[in-house]
Image (cartoon, rainbow, N blue to C red):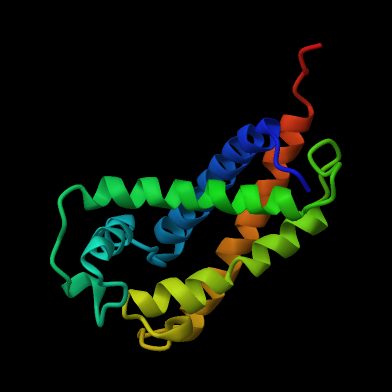
Length: 168
């Protein structure tokens, strides 16, 4: 599929919207069940250590803090959401934006869980699939469900966009 300016604009809206839904889900988990979420300041710290050539940490929490790490983490979080949405739109059926389907978005959302389990968590010092955390099974389930919520967010945002009046 060819990426058009419409796909990029849609990816921004869908990616930001799906990320907001994911954040709302994580906030609900934290407040209702006491399940902690990724501290985006630590995500920012990870990204800000990369220019120095450090991509993997034994403990990102023990790594030296970086200036503006919280802002960098939040920007990175939403940028990742937009990039994942753009990749999804490139892979989705050509008419998916006009007629979004839950199944495609849900399967993609589930598929994106490979990034936290096999890239982010090991890089932050949490082990593959959170194996070095105190509750690895809970962390894995939380990652999976959070990415399901991201997939649902992709779908819901695309439905909302598909119902907007289009200029003639």
